[in-house]
Image (cartoon, rainbow over all chains, first blue to last red; front, top):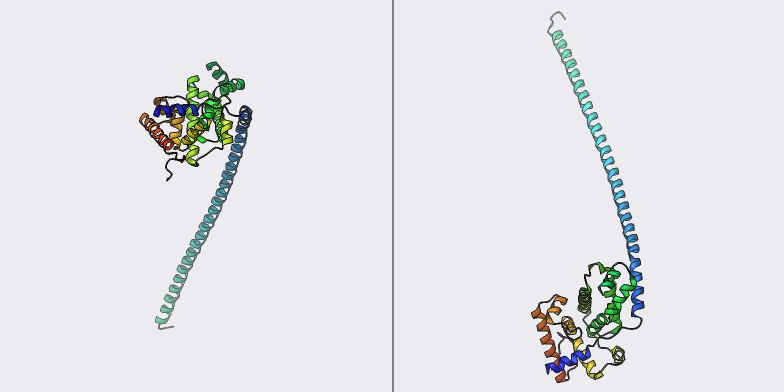
Length: 117
Length: 180
């Protein structure tokens, strides 16, 4: 029975020929496929250009950001320096006033203690 | 054939056409018996030859070419069937188109056997077609389909048992794994 089925299978599976258009269609598809590498190169090139532009834009944005950050830091440093200078000036003024106040107080004390005044 | 292969590798389209002429029946028939649809089989066979053209440099000899074509065709069809596992039943007109003018034997019986093959799983269809169309032994089938020899033998035995059972019971073909 198996031998019978095997012979039926061999009969049923004899190679068949494709249509007469097979070769022509194949050559047309082959020609179309061979044109694709150019398209792919074009697609690759445009993709590379896109990445290059994106990278350039990112670099510009980063540079502007860094520059802005530096300017802000510089202003902050200047502000702190001005504040230090003001504080220093206030401290000096305070010391001077203190000295003047003591001198006035000492003089006042001396006048008050002089019996002949 | 090795000379044609060398010329085709060098870019000679005429030599490539000669290789296509020599192998198109085998490639097309393998796809046709596994898919059951002539147009789809032609499309698949053309894709195989386009892939061959792109890979000619890797083909070492005429024997390797035949092996490569069978392997690529079978794997392409199996992948296709796994993605779209529908049972394809060809019409009688299409079946008549597939027949050779001088095809001996009983056409109805041949049609029945082909439909039984289409009722098998994709791997089993490939094993049976390579065995009975290409006349490959289980060792060569195993190499072609990247299967173990035991798996090939098991597919062959199960497929023959199933087909015999369906012939005897007069059961219509259905894809393996479908509920009765």
